[in-house]
Length: 186
Image (tube, rainbow, N blue to C red):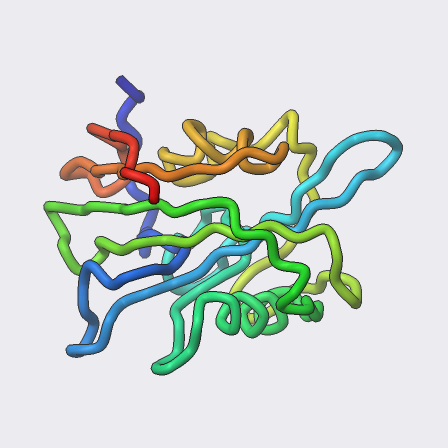
């Protein structure tokens, strides 16, 4: 059982996309997440951003956010990477790595379904935005204590080529995973 952590001010979930499980203003609340991967001096690295505003303030997160009405997860991923880090990703270079379902029974409006993407190709250099400060992290040394609790269970595997299909339920502190189970895959 993970050690309980107090939620940070403004903390909320910011991850992927798929069929909606919650609504925000009557519209489906869907999001996407993309992890940019590179190798430097033989070391695999991932671009994470420390959130400055909005969902997940203070946490290191992948690049992503809400889907606009009528937008696919891939389209949103391309848009969000550009908005949050100032780099351009070709939709064909996004590699889907799985699906996550986040349940927050103590704050149901945070519950969502999440599609996860990775890419090793983009144009431009990541730069700070109004939403986050991007930084490269060694895949073997992720800042898991400064990320959402579920990340320690799946993120490393996805970053080295694996896939994920999992459901996570968060406790009343809105930060600690209290149960998890595999999602059925088709």
